[in-house]
Length: 284
Image 1 (spheres, rainbow, N blue to C red):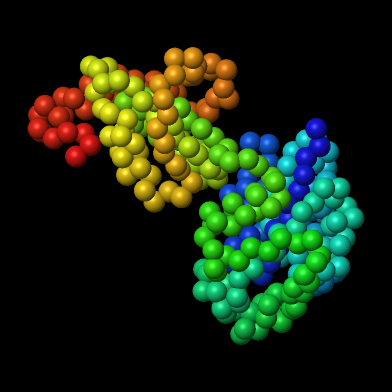
Image 2 (cartoon, one colour):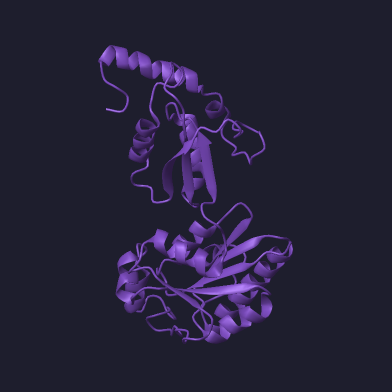
């Protein structure tokens, strides 16, 4: 199976790397401009010729990874149309995404102070200041996303939908979650920063083993992940034929040994003891 490349380009600090990290999956390699310049391409400067050579090497790596079955997400400024055409010729299956933001917004995001140094003449050939950025024309088959106008989640959704790069959600975690504990959170957190996640709560009947209603568990998890845009919580029927558990027919998320040893039953008993001592209900 051959992989495909998504090439994000735009002004410095426009949001390329942030979006690229959100597109990385289990068989995806992220090629980042800063990383390649600090490692493979330390011999290159920032003239147009060196920039083009930097991109030629990156395109070669992307094509090689694609042939090995890996998807690639590349995040490079790629300021010239001639460079983008060169990449089209070298990478068999590539889709371009113009990550667009006004230059004043890019400057506000610039924690390294590169724009300020460029304006003072301390950095030469800086794209957007003393080196050009050629905006693609309409009809060139380039998807445009605007990071100053839309959230990371909205832009990722548009990229995935327009390029048909992945289905949503990318991960579903099904369980009783009675209650949510550190082991659960480690599993969810291991993918939630980069992928869409649905936490599906089995609607179990109340019992000594299941003392919390599905709605109480839903509200608890929503509260824990209230500031996490990638996590959605839903209640599903408790269907007997659904198989759940570690290493039972589904891909397994690796967690540290100390996390894997956490017992939900013991955690629940600790909660119950706290409730007896404090007189407070877990969901209060």
